[in-house]
Amino acid sequence: MELTIGWLYPSLMSTYGDRGNVICLRQRAEWRGIRVNVLSLAQDTPPEEFQKVDVLVGGGAQDRQQEIVMRDLRGAKAEAIREKIEAGTPGVFTCGSPQLLGHYYEPALGQRIEGLGLLDMESKHPGPDARRCIGNVVFEVTATRLAQDLQKMLGAAPVIIGFENHGGRTYLGNVEPLGRVVSGYGNNGEDGTEGAFYRNAIATYSHGPLLPKNPFIADWLIQTALLEKYQRPVSLEPLDDTLAMQAREAMFKKLTALKK
Ligand code: GLN
Image (cartoon, rainbow, N blue to C red):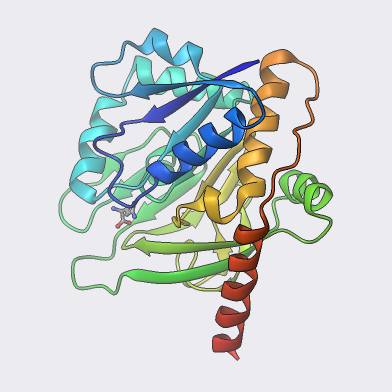
């Protein structure tokens, strides 16, 4: 079996360490004997290349870089991403990336930038003097289908441990939130929602990077990508995640104790 990871704008959207998601996906797939290609999807990539992608990864970016990406993504490339996500290709989009999948993003300075409008949500930065949403975050996955899949994998309610660093605030319309914040800011620090889940696309404010801290999400993405590609369920050999799980446990205890 083989998987192609499509990595959105690696040089412009790697400010917050989200390349760790690509490394984690690749390594966990290769440990199971799956061959992995990493395809950079950037300014010079012809839109046809997007067809090859089995799983999409998009990282965070500062407002300036995000604006360049959002302008480049108009037309055929936007259409190619839309088709992929609508067809069920799984993906993980962190912070700046979900902002560009929504209707628009209003940066700290300057004009509103149109997004792909794929997720019914809007993101606005309140301005350069506003407090950034920075810190460790804990949230419970509530998106129904994903929560059920993860519950089966873990034998427990799925909790995500991450780290957020954003100025923009996201407000959801008619799209399912990814989760409910236990500790931290999440989408906007007001309504308790975190991220969004649409088809098989995971949108989140959680860096960390997300996947090494929450390896079951990486396995869900790999399994879903293989199911979509080969049209049959594939069960992955378990890996020894003891260290990651111990680190999560310690962080969970610390952050929920701080809250009390
Ligand atoms: N520029 C966006 C914001 O500040 C995204 C930041 C990020 O990707 N971490 O909200």
